[in-house]
Amino acid sequence: MSSSLQPGSGGGSKKKGGRSGEGRRVTLDHIVVLVPYHFLSGLPGLSASGNGGGADGTAAQAAAGQEAAPEWFRELFTFSPGGRHADGLTENVLVLFKSGVYLEFIAFTPEAAGATAAAGGGGKGRQGHKWGGFAEGSVVDWAVTVFHDGGGGGESGTGAAKNDYDEVVRPITQRVLLGHRRHHQPDDEGQQPGGGGGGGGQVVVYGDLIPGGRTRPDGVKLEWATVPAVRLDPSSSSSSSPSPSEKEATPVDRRGGAAAAEAEGEQVHPGQAPFWCVDETPRELRVPYAHAGTEHANTGAVGVASVQVTPAPGVSAGDLGRLYDEVFARGDGEDGAEEEEKKKNNNNKWALSAPEGTHFHRDGVLELVDAAGHEAAVAAGDVVVALYTDKPELAGKRVGGKVDGDRAIWFDLVGV
Image (cartoon, rainbow, N blue to C red; front, side, top):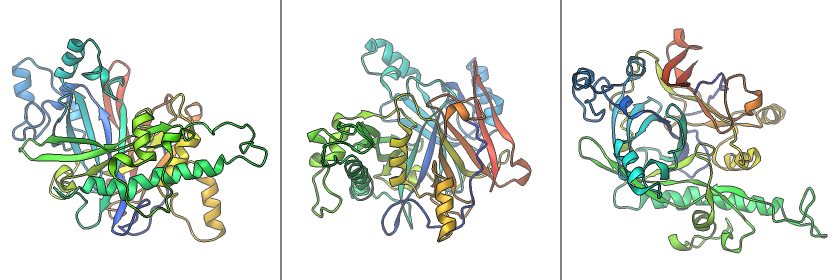
């Protein structure tokens, strides 16, 4: 989970972000890290279950003979209550940053393992979960959101998640499919660019909305929707997407490309492309970073400095790059020749904007890397994350510890 990437200078205003519309920005939302279930227990300021608030539960766990989170983990961050997800399979605690981004330390519940055994591996429980095959200690996924200036987004009872999908996420799929068709348009002799007369292979786009939610320890119900990245065969007649120039609204169940992607596409290996987390209830309820819990005394962490993605087997770096191009900006640069030179040098890098923009740190960096040439021990499919710190004395340090066996959680700290 460590990273030696030094993000480039961000600059710019607080409102800078990825592609979106007026008053809305595409920003990094959160990073998902899988941990053993007992890591949620005995955290400072949380109950023994990890999610009730109140006194430190470490002593209670020890008295009951139950394993609690290791000391290095308890001291790493200030933890905020999370909750159990609606499916009952996973539970989490949060680490909120001043930038508006957060870490989600998530664990499979004991019931998840029981459900898998009871179902005989029939798609329920951990075995049927998209993150079920990952080892604890892994960065299993990461998410972006549509951040609304002046509140973050989400408004109960208004269809806010669907609106964000229709107006921001769906057009990304349309643009990727349109670009793919243009690139693979046969010439006069029926040949595809670069030779061959096939349909151009698969393309990575976004699927349809999947409702989600959880209940906070204080009883507040949160609702959102996620949108996974999927691989789609654009040559399929059912996957034709409306042209981005079309003006008419299209019902949810007749969305063309996006709906077909969810219906027929295979979800991309988690972590390779960000999934979307768009809010139905107000985001400030899901991510209460403006209130408390953002001071991290032992790390000074204020946000995410970099996300490095190593393509998994069967996942094309080119396909990922084309999707990234539609979601993220390419980073800052001056006008003219210097900007062109920067684009050339940053061919596999994109800017990661935070909800608070550059108020607390410069933009982060998203980078596609080759496992063979990486200086750290990474494997195909790995996602590596570094954090910004506002403590100069900690810049360049690595923090974290051992999870179990050969697995460990490490974060490199980068000066703001």
